[in-house]
Amino acid sequence: MSVSRITHKYIREHPSVQDCLERGLINYSALAREICKTTDSESFDAVLVACRRYYQKKKSHVSREQKIIALMKKSKVRVRNKIAVATIEKGKGLDKALEIQNFVKKEKGDFNLIEGEDVITMITNVEYIPIIKKTFGMGIIKTSTGLAQITLVFGDNLEMTPGVLSFIYRMFSEYDVNIREEMSCWKDVMVVVDEKDVAKVMQMLSFD
Image (cartoon, rainbow, N blue to C red; front, side, top):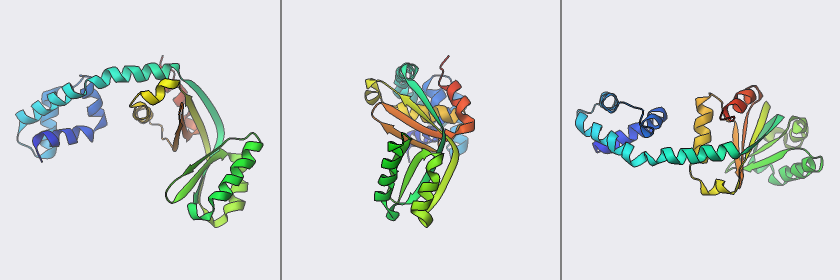
C-alpha cells in the first residue's frame, strides 16, 4: 500500500483527527510523526506531504459544514417520550406488524416500522408493548423501554445537502449520546435515544 493510502486510511479511521485536519487545526509534523509511529512507516516526508494534500482536498468540507449548521438552525425539533422499541424476527409476520400499526394509528398513537433483512423493528409508545408481546410471543428478539424519539423537521434543502446524517451522528457522538435507532423520511430525520439524554440532546441542538 502506498504512503498516501496509508496516511488517508489512518485519517479516515480517526474521526477526531479528520475533523481537526479539515478545519486546519492540527500540527502536520506532529500528525505525520504519529502516523509513522502507528503504521511503522519510515517515510516521514511523504506522510507529511500526504497530510497536507488531504487537507487541500477536504477543506471544502468546512464550508459545507456551515451550510449544514444553517440548515440545522432552521429545523424544528419535536420530542416524544415514553417510547419503546421492539425487534422481531421477520418471518414471524410482517402482516401482523402492519395490523398493529393500523391499530396504533387509529388510537392516535406513535408508530414507525423499519424492515431489515432478517428482522423488523417497531418504534411505538410503551403502552402498546403488551399488545406486541401477545401478538408475536417467542418471535420477539428484544424490547427496550425508557426511550424518547427526537424528530428534526427540515425544509426542502435537506435532500440537496450532502453530509447531514454524518454531521448528526458525529454531533451525537461528541456529546456521548447513543442513537438507539435512526430513520429518515424526506424532510424528517428521526432518532431514538434514552430518555435520560433528552436534555443533553436539546442543548446540543440549540446552536447558541
